[in-house]
Amino acid sequence: MDRSHAKEAEFREILDGYAQYMNIQVQQYDLAKFGLDPEDILQDVKVRIWKIIQSERIIQCPGSYIRKIITSAVIDQLRKRRREDSLVACEKLKCISEQGFAYFREADRRKGLEETVGRAVEGLIDSRRQVVKLYLMNLSIQEISGYLKWTQDKTRNLLYRGLADLKESLKEMEAKNEN
Image (cartoon, rainbow, N blue to C red; front, top):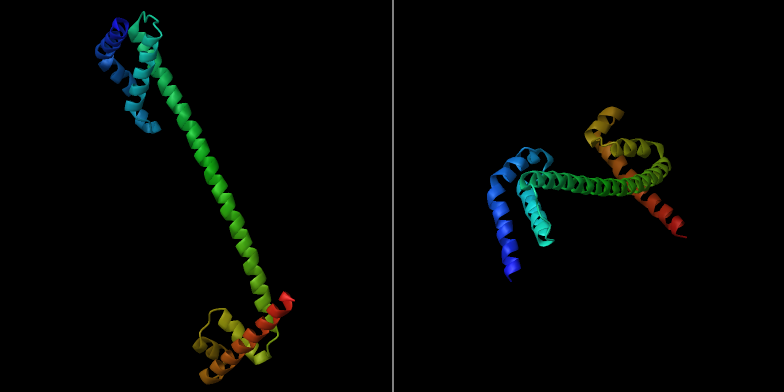
């Protein structure tokens, strides 16, 4: 019991005697720019000092030894941060590549759909095909009738009939693909 009290007293003596020195040494590294917390370093230093006292090694020059411990703790924390950052970067790249694959699958599916609709549109009669193609290019009925120099009623009629024909054609294509 006496031995553990002596170790605690030695630990307290070092911490109390060198607290300001430890704070100054830690602050000189400007840890905020690396995203490190000075309190984490100080806590690590205290743990290391406690382990040394527990192992019953004698600290000859506490000031220089504490400085060495602080430097080692800072380096260890920077290495740990670098490892964590590289793991995060690796995970980000993995997520990006997975999203890229999903994007390409979606692009392939969309391209196939566009080709199917394109073939179906080409099967329409000429007047309906013109109107439906312009409609699929996001032109309004007014814009299509102005472009083709037709009345809006004629354009609307051809568009609705063309879309109905297109729908039937796509259903037939789908039925053929299922067989």
